[in-house]
Length: 421
Image (cartoon, rainbow, N blue to C red; front, side, top):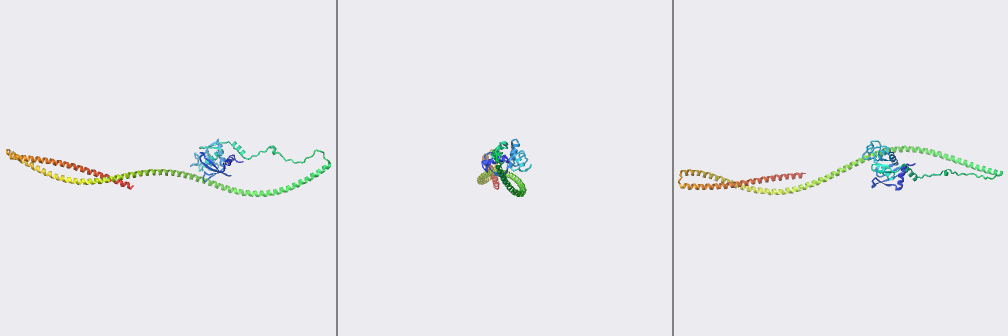
């Protein structure tokens, strides 16, 4: 008798269609499942789309043994025996019991289609993190008996026999009639014996045919045993290949996750590059503005250099004039010294010749001349101080010009540095 769980899933395929779209837990996405004699084929398990019927029976038994609900388990980046993939989870139980995985082996994630198909068949309830039973075993058996063919025969119908016999009349029979009836019975007995002999011949023929068929059946059983051994070897190879494929799929999933991580890092690096590019563009704009300012400063420097050159020429002329004035002042000072000496001599002569009016006039003239010389000397000193002030201002302008030239040279040097970058 077929397992009620398998019958329930098959009847659901008969109702909904084969193949059918199976909804995931969210109800927004679907995968396709197709029922076959040996199990169910799904399109969301990549290289291992086959789920044998044994999986669903073992899953329901495991749920029942755990009081009607159990954790689903997570095989992503996990191995059998990890905290989220223990033997007390449905994924770990199926991996151990159905696929023969051991503690520490990688496990292919199959819980999603298994739980979704059990929920679609209205056998279990698929919730986040766990799966629980919806119906009891009695309900499954009742639904199986309703769907299957189970004829029940009445006791009276099974005990009916086709009774055939000779009807014997109740009136008394005459002796002649008894002889006649006896002959008839002997004739019928002979016919029955003949039929028995024919049936014996037919039975012997049938026995010969049965012996021949038994020999053929034994030969076929030997062939079947050989085929079974070959099939078992192929199944073992298939299991090994399935385990290898599961391991490879686990590695592939790990690689895909690493690729996703690297893609995320690359995306972050691209964002950083965009930010750096924007900063670089801003720096380039600042450099362009700086270049414009430097060009303006160059023009100002050329103008200032021209003004400095012009001022230098003027200063040279002023210095030449100042040198001439200094020579004149020196001459005047020498004259003043000579005049003072003459005044002293005149004062001595005056003291010797006090009453002489001529000497007094000469003395007044000399005093007037000395006064004029002192006024001239004062004006020369004012001119000299004015020239000295102009010279100080000129030197200050030269210092400022040299400072401006130094700043411009630094800006040019920094501009060359930015060009090198």
